[in-house]
Amino acid sequence: MRRAAFYGFPLIDDLGFKIGKYHHRCKVVDPDTVDRVCHPEDESVLRRAVQRYFPDADGPAVLLKTCLFTNTRDEHFILDVLPEIPAVSIAAGFSGHGYKFCSVVGEIISDLALDGRTRHDISLFSLRRLL
Image 1 (cartoon, rainbow, N blue to C red):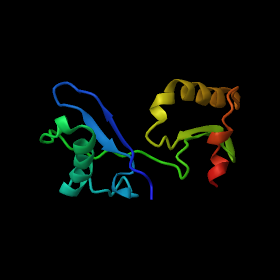
Image 2: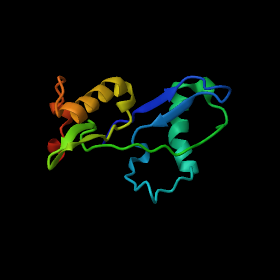
Image 3: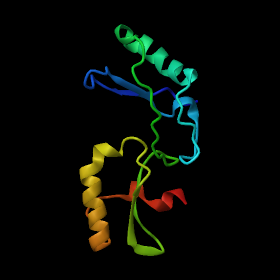
């Protein structure tokens, strides 16, 4: 079983802080049909983490929202070109952490789109590893 991994952001405006859990309740969903209502059992998963790690913040929830992001099986994103159509560049499956790499991902994808190659070693992010 995967170890719980929580994430958060400090004070946002006057709303308090944000806390979330990667792979919350271990669901795989279709974004077109997912239940976007936050249920008491969804809050209880987060509430236990708040009580353990941030006990002074254990007040009423101000806002609950469903947040989705894409994952690949190995949780590494895809940076590649389509094998059958090399003119198509792919940047996908950022598994919730791709935002940290947006500047270099932009550089790599523009390299692939313009030149069909990049100076960066992107072998870890190959589409072929998932096929």
